Amino acid sequence: MMNDLFDIRRFGLYARKEFRENWKVYALFAVGIVVMQLVFIYLLCKPLENKFYYNQLKGYDLNPFAGLFNSAVIATWISGSYAYSYFSSSSKTFSSLTLPVSPLERFCFAWLLTIPLSLIITAILWRVTWLFTTPFVLSTFPKVSIVMDYSKAFRNVVQTSLAIGVFGISGAFMLGSLVFRKYSFFKTLAIGLGAILLLYAFQQNVLTAILPNADRVETYPYPGFIYASVRTISKLHIQFGSTLELPYLIWWVWCLPVILWVATYLKIKEKEV
Image 1: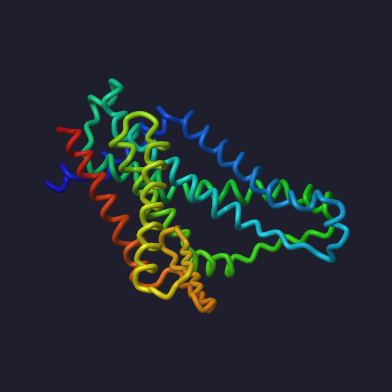
Image 2: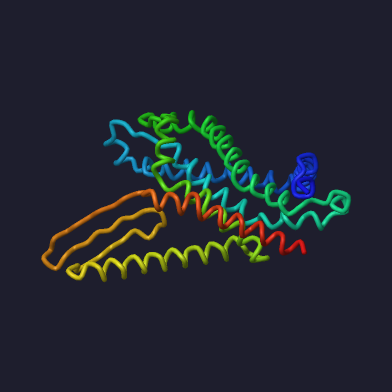
C-alpha cells in the first residue's frame, strides 16, 4: 500500500525524467531570477543618480537582502502557478506510460519545485549576481556600503510577513494552477488581490463600528499585519500596530498553507480519476 502511495525510487526516476524533459523551462526560470536581481539592484541605486542628493551624503547603506526577499516571494508564486504542468506532464510523453506515478508523488515533486528548490536557486543566483555587480556599484558610487549581515536578515525574515508570501500565498498559486488551466498566475493574483481588498474593507467596517467616536479610521490591508490609525472627533490621534501576532502567525504561516496543500493534493487525485 505504501509502495503504491509513495516509492522513493520511482519518485527519483520521475524527478529525473521531468528535469530532463523540461530543462529549458528551468533554465528560463533561472534567467528570470537573474533579471529580477538586476532590476532590484538598479532600483536600490536609482536614488543615487541624483547628483545633488548624492553630493549631500556622507555615506549610503544598500540593503542587498531587499532584492533577495522580494524575488524569493515572486519565484515561489511563479513556480506555484505553473505547477499544473508538473502534474499533467506525465500524460504527455510516451515515457510516462512506463513510469506511472501516484498523485502524492506528483504533488511532492511540484511542492519541492515551488518552495525549497525555487528558494535555493533564488538565493544562489542572488549571491552570484551581487558578487559580480558589487565592484561596478562601488566604483560608480564610492560612498555606498554593502554589508551582508545574514543574522540581521534572518531576524527580519522571522519578524516580517515574508513567510506568508512564501508559504501561504504560493500555496494559493499551486491550487490556482489546477483550477485555472490558462493564465492561472494572473487569475489567482486577481482573486488574491480581491480577497485582500475584502479583508481591508472588513477591518475598516469593524473598527468603525466598535469605535463610534472615531472621525477617521485607517488600517493596513496586507494580511498578517495589524495596523490602525484612528482620529477621534475630539482630534485625539491613536496609532497601534502589531506584526504577526501569534494567532495571525499560526493561521497565515501554518494553517492556511496546509489547507491549500491538502486541497491541491485532493484536486490532483480528482484529476487522476
